[in-house]
Length: 140
Figure: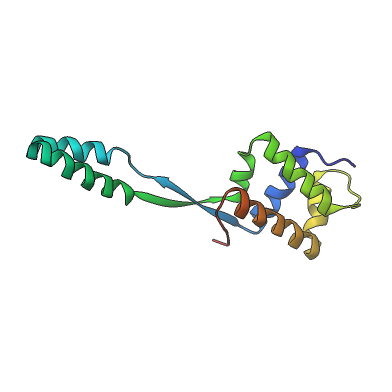
């Protein structure tokens, strides 16, 4: 049977959920520290306060990064179609001549094979490391 992009994504999502795969995603909690610092500095100290406020605000802004862990399955579902197609092609290469009826049957076959799981997990890890420039964590 032919593996569609939707089937490949479903298989990878099922596998990543079963293994509880997560990735660290960095984001800013708040914006505008530099602008607020500059405004406050200018009001309090005039032109020198503007410079000092901008520097202090910028430093505070750089410290405001936070890390959130997202399930790999959520990341996969949000990928653009060309990226999904690329992953689908890699999955087809990994599953080879495996005979399956539908995506549920394919998922069951993969979950029953340690070797296939290992190959697909390496594929996912490699994709996350290379394309998303972050690493995978397992478990809760």
